[in-house]
Image: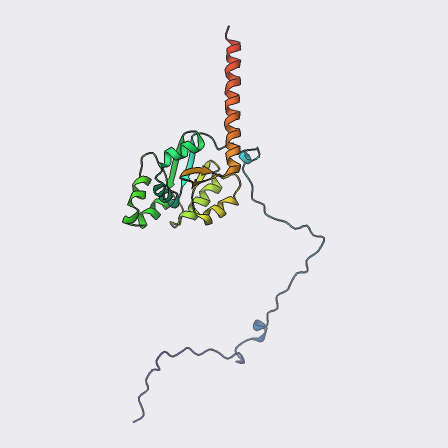
Length: 216
């Protein structure tokens, strides 16, 4: 009797040799036809369209009450600095502020566990507005960047450097951060919001004087 054939351990599948007659040489040697670029041809670029609210000196969609998107790091740093989030925002902007929290940020805080239960309790505060998420996944940074690019009515509150770097590339989005145990806004947007507030006060004062003149 002959030897019993046993299957080799971790045997690899055999590949067809490149010199095999079954392989067509024309299929192997496909040369890509490169089109010669005309130097006189005008190059076309797709430029993203900016909303009409950014064609003025300041973003016209930003106004009191301010809607502020809150990040996980901002809540944690405010706890370390012993700050009341809503009060510190109002002290920074001198107007009513509505902190908003997305489902992704809430899920991120819940995943952190019992160590961050104080942050979770703050996030569930009734003063916070809950924003539902319809996209796939629960990555908070992508969620916040996507929401800020679509809607120009939000201020982003974060301490994360990478997220700040991403949001700075988007025009018309102010960034709030914590420094020296208080909430601060990026300097360029402090000026724009100040101009907006002064212009609103000027319009109101003009309308009041006009009404007084009309009253006999």
